[in-house]
Length: 356
Image (tube, rainbow, N blue to C red; front, side, top):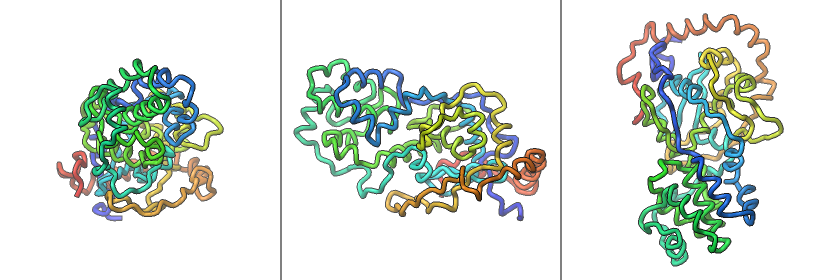
């Protein structure tokens, strides 16, 4: 393979931003779920918990261990990707993809296609006006997470349905978009909560993914950053893509088929980068298993994911033993391909914020 044909890295080998800066997030504000649980009391809680959006509450209950350094390394392994809604990271010689399809497989959220994802033509109904007046928020702006938390302390006299609406609104604000606590959320999406059944069936996974991927691509990894959206999905993606690494460092949990609920996560692990590369030979590459989601107007049929962790064709025990002694050699070969003969311009190594 000629050097010019090898995928170009966003950061030259050895020149990646060091993980000495933090990656923080807003998802699952520590005050939000307790407030919503108290607001709803016991009636109706089980219905929400077992809905498609309930997976986010179950994840919150895991007390998942956020590993900023782990996510940072995976993001600095990125290669240039011209797809607007996609990340690709190079684990030694294996590119692994994070797209809408992987996000859906990991979270189990509804990522189906709708013509009007922004709900631009959604009118403000009388029921919506009444509900928003109860909350005491501006009709033209979406409620902030802070306003939802405040409403939780004043909703004891509300109807059961209105308290359910408040709960779903909290899931949307605190997990789906997860921006700064005081920032208003999308008003049109918030209005949909009046129709409880319609709200539950809306493809919130698609909204969550779009919001997350946009935030990630805008960030400068050389600085302390806040990522908006359900950022923990990126850490689960690392475990999902590197099953052997996950078995050792992800604190796997038994008996749950949903990848989002299959790991406890870990904090403060040392030598994360070295161990990720050590386990690279079983990296799970889904690049050829799904079509590409290029824009909002195109949503190809999503095929069932092959369980690469257990599929015999991905059984690499012999390769693990063979390659474990050759990681340095492989790294050296990659370095020659990416930094030896190929020239990297500033445009090639900067973050791919606006790909063509």
